[in-house]
Amino acid sequence: MSDPQFFRFLTYIDETVAAEVQAAGCPYCGGALHQANYPRKPRGCPGAFRVEYSTRLSFCCHQCRRRTTSRSVRFLGRRVWLGWVVVLGSTRVGERTPAASALCEALSIPWRTLARWRRWWREGFAQSAVWQVLGARFLPPVAVVRLPAGLLERIPGQGQAPLLALLTWLWPLTVTAPEGR
Ligand SMILES: [Zn+2]
Image 1 (cartoon, helix red, strand yellow):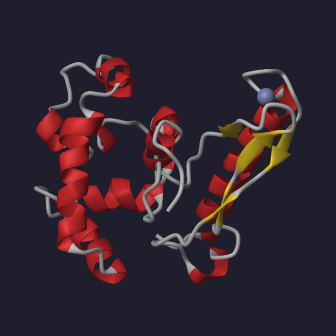
Image 2 (tube, helix red, strand yellow):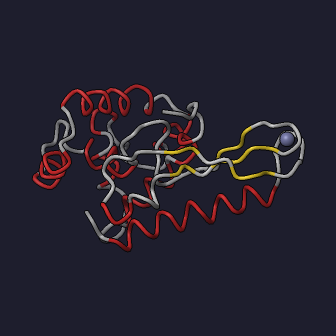
């Protein structure tokens, strides 16, 4: 999972969405949005992309000073691990597929982190409005205990297409959590 095209494409999506958000102006007062990015030290990021992935795009209103953070396919809320790692790393739990195990070992993801993600998929995510809508699209239903592996394997597409689709579906969850370290 170090395909440069994939990482570049995620940045492209984030930047495109951020540009749209900025062009729309402040959702609270309509004022102009100025860039006010958050610094990040992402984990699970290939070395070549460290600089590119060290900022979470965000804006501050010139008028009312309120912050607007655009959705992201790269960062999943406040987590230091990038979204793709949270998804693919989590497929290891309970499933222990060779690919997921190799990923967890290669990135040295601590076991307690994986356990926390597992809880999040089964509790936080499973109770989110996103899952209520998304889960209803699959028949037979995807079992919550098999999230996210059970979900990924049901999304059609080759290569990284299912992962990308899932990251896009998780979008609303990337801006609900307070930002920061
Ligand atoms: Zn404003």
